[in-house]
Length: 224
Length: 206
Ligand SMILES: [Zn+2]
Image 1 (cartoon, rainbow over the protein chains, first blue to last red):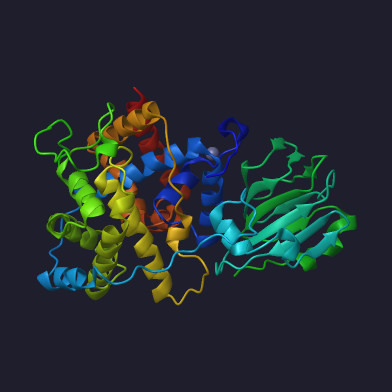
Image 2 (cartoon, each protein chain N blue to C red; image 1 turned 90 degrees about the horizontal axis):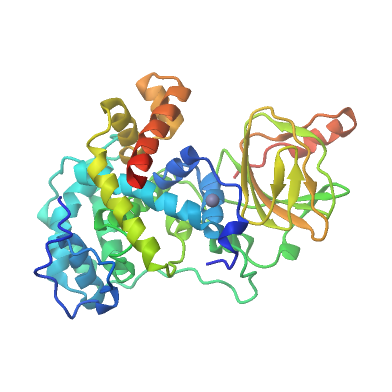
């Protein structure tokens, strides 16, 4: 578990997102982002446990469907099978990272392929297999600004390192933000440390100012 | 299934003394069976557990009618094998047996869907589970009361809210899929889910 004081996380996923996560219906990329927030946030872990209790209670209330005796026999015959291997953290991994991100990043931020978008913004796309959502790390130089942009769809952001501020607040490691639709915003990284965020998008960023629009074709959605 | 948390009685004293703290571990039949499986690989306890939960897992697999009966049986096998392998990590203070089984079934179903759709991902649902943590006993007590009340209160939800929760949890439908199926606006589905959860939350905290 991450050693971040629980009161440091101030921005949480809304309950409907946590419900979809607890019921297993989010896409793999969105679910990974929510799970990563949970590893920072005790409050949302507890909420999720209660939301999973709803699933447990519903399971108890289903009308049972008969299972053949042969299924039990097959399971009993397989009890001594070796268990599947579990993933272990690499020695070099950043222990502040949630385990599942550590697995996707597989090493150091510096070893990833970074695509430079502006002077202060680079993006690295990670593969989750999600056909509808792009799952990427945004790396913003300290004090750097992301040009004003909108989204055609939804954008989940989780701060992993450093922090940023925008029109609606200041965000630190573990903070989760979701934006929908066409809100414009202009995030600025806080001073003192490079900011790294996980961003999950279902539509590409669109820069709104004329002088940045030429970047838009570079940012077509890279899901998968 | 009924929780028999105050039945006392038959709990074997040697089993899992580590959970035996004043806040009280769950001593219902299914929690005890899981503890026996986890601590001593007790096949008889596992078989009892199977006979109770396998038909519920099969019903879960078939709800939403997206899996065939053969796949539903396969899911039952996968879930039950995981139950056997993971029972050592079950903490009867923290979770109800049914909730614990539900999370395993949910993850196995997600992985099975992805396999059937030839969806290539480096992540398995188990990767999304968090490492377990030590918690203060007052937190555990609070947690446990909450979880028992969720169970009691589920029956009191208005039918439209219960129906939506069923779509989301048992049938594995996203809010927008549920909206399309019930021919309701997405906003209505979201607000019914939210109302149901708020009601459960308010009652839990009362
Ligand atoms: Zn949170």
